[in-house]
Amino acid sequence: MRDETAGRYKTKALLIVAGIREDGYREILGLKLAENEGEDFWLELSEALKNHGLRRVKLVVSDGHKGIRAAVEKAFLGASWQMCHVHFVRDVLRKVPKKEMEGDIPYQSFPEKQWRRIKTTNILERVNKELKRCSGVVGAFPNERSLIRLAVAILIDINEERLTGRRYLDMKGSNL
Image (tube, rainbow, N blue to C red):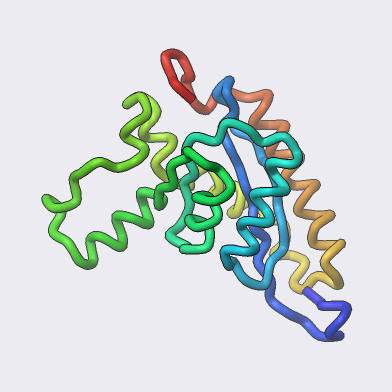
């Protein structure tokens, strides 16, 4: 996208936060453009989400970025952080024999019927794929507003589809 203050094109990341509501439906919680993913960025985003009503966070699943983990520990006291299972397995398989991998992993403290859905960042991978598909035809965006406008329109459609579709997670007997 074109950076209006610098007068040149820059690469920025569009970071999206999604969650699972108490009724088991997925929801897009927020998005933000960033040049880096440091702890300060994630802490600011976490605080903004809390100011907009995010409550009772029990588990945060993300890639292995240290900034996210540190921000979760500060912003969501009592919540567990876990690396996405797919990212975790990739990292571990490079270094440790599979039999050594078993242990007390955070998602396993939730009901077993929920493990498949909460152990990865798949909830976001599909959203990212759709955003890339729709924004790829644009090439470079003329400014941040144009990128945000398109992303929000796409995310609203995805969110409405999720909230009117099938329940993502069975919450019966859950402590979430």
